[in-house]
Picture 1 (cartoon, rainbow, N blue to C red):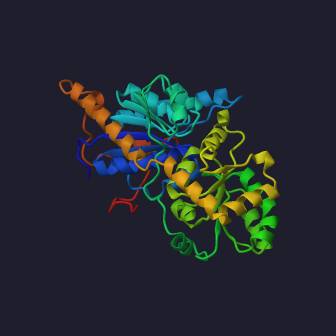
Picture 2 (cartoon, one colour):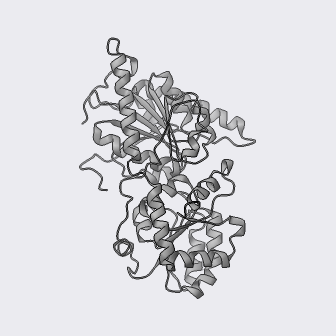
Picture 3 (cartoon, helix red, strand yellow):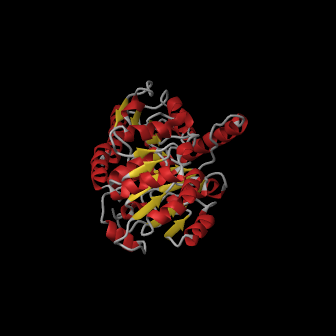
Amino acid sequence: MKNRSSPRIVIACGGTGGHLFPGVAIAEKLAPRGCEVTLIISSKEVDKQAVRGLSEAEIVTLPAVGLRRGGEVEFLIAFGKSYQLARKLFRWLRPHAVLAMGGFTSAPPILAGKTAGARTFLHESNSIPGRANRWLSWLVDRGFVGFPSAAAKLKRCPVTVCGTPVRARFQPSSSERCRSQLGLDPERPVLLVMGGSQGAGGVNEIIRRSLFTLARVAPEWQWFHLAGPRDTERLRRRYAELNLRAIVHPFFEQMELALGAASATITRAGASTLAELSAMRLPALLVPYPAAVDNHQMHNARTYSSIGAAQVLDQIAATPDKVSTALLELVRNEALRKHMQEALARLVNPGAAEEIATEILNRIHEGEVKTAAAPTFHSLPLPQGAKPPAMFRATTNLTLVPQPAREEPVSS
């Protein structure tokens, strides 16, 4: 049980793995420093899977809908509902700080946090800030960004360039050991195919069309394919037809093993994915999502390719011959691999999560010192062992997800 005066910090990070996993990385740094951490995620199944077993934080789901053309009314209704629920939660929780990790799932908690008197922060992983964070930059006390180019576009709050937080378990490791743990041959190359936390139909189709050529030129390769829920069975059949050794999952929680086992990967270019590739020093062929808002994945990818940290292939131009040629080079050209790994090492900041955690706690401390003579609403202690009111446990819109009691720190 933490001290009754422990800082209470909310991290709004749901919607996609690119928002959620950096938030988890920050929670992993806050919890050992005596903080009570609450993660706000979306109601998507992929979010719930991603936090299963997490002991550093309490998990809350909140309804949210992204802003899209033609869906403005639906967005406003969901936004208002999320804001009201967040306000109710914060009246009970009384957070000292609220951190938004991007996406419209994180906007209502920031507004509710301002109303509750909490310090507010945002983190932007991409080279081009998303619409939610551009808007929130008018409201928060401080911003953190993964790419220097993003800082210039968040002009309404002080900004620190710190990189994208990566969970502690992501660091270079023995490929042979990782392959053995996954049930693969430790001596044979492994190609990792992934499209973000929910899979990517475009990447799946590129590989499906390229497998005949790759089976002919590299029959010894093993495949680890994260396909998302819709394409898993179809791709399993395709690998079997070509007699290729492959493991295909819709989703996989132990991504440090998948990345550690891989010789190379073909993947989208989300900022969180790129940060994990950098941490693991994994050569990659990046296929940016062509419909990403503001084409931010292409901007991310070009930042990496400009210093030789990755290769980039436009989805429209991804023919089987081009894909096969690029992947063969990534696996077999040792000089290229070494150059990429050195470039990737320059792009990762292993202390990003710690830096953000420290700044948040410093800001909370500053606020407590300034208001010591007149305690504020959000600084009042919760009763020891307090549980949320029944309304928060019963509603289908705001759900506290039970987490296992912490017995020992999560291994890194």
